[in-house]
Length: 295
Image (tube, rainbow, N blue to C red; front, top):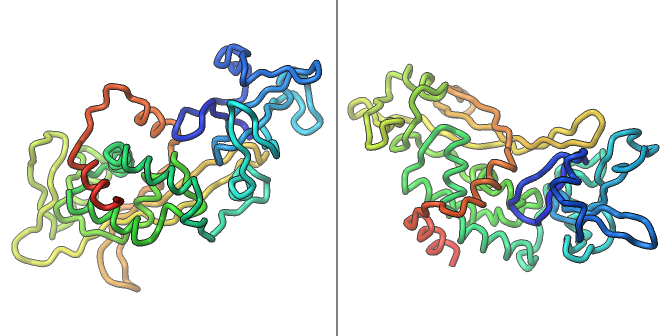
């Protein structure tokens, strides 16, 4: 792997390069001397397990002059606990890894962590998902998304990590009507929807957005949905990018018409940065929705 984290959870990732010494200060618990040799440890960006940085000071047969990270099959004090199931379901576990379709048990401690994380950060989760698709969701949609997440037990999906919860929330949901949502002005989504005769876009309190209404009494069947969460590995096998698809659609199966489509690259660092904002202005009404639904 070519990136690492310093702390488990939704936190910043860093490239494995010469900046590592400056970022860590070459201090414990990242730099550790064991039997006269320096070992460098960090946290895997994919599974939150412990990894060792190899080839940092000298060339290796595996990667030549390029340092890289690899999992270690044991816990590392002050870094991370090793979990076999997490390792097996990590996209960085091996070059031939494929995303599993199985779920993890509701008793798994990671599931409890995810539920608590959603309770504390649901407003940030919604904010990031909205930003990625140029929409502002209605209260009904924000409630419905979390209800579907709960009903589908999406926190038990093996591909769920704290860093991708906003997009897993979207994928676990059904297609929703665009009516009542707000669309960001001067975006490709706005341009596409503006061409639809059945759609009426009206001004709202936020000058950067317009509300989707319907033109007259006719039914407006236009919907939006998130689907197909997947990973793409680099040719050298050291880097994994994560994506999800988003679309605005019309019509009935099998004659679905795509009005707008966007491939969203899941930005782990962006969500981590949002979660780490100290003076974040909480939207209590969204947090209250999470509390009511989950508890």
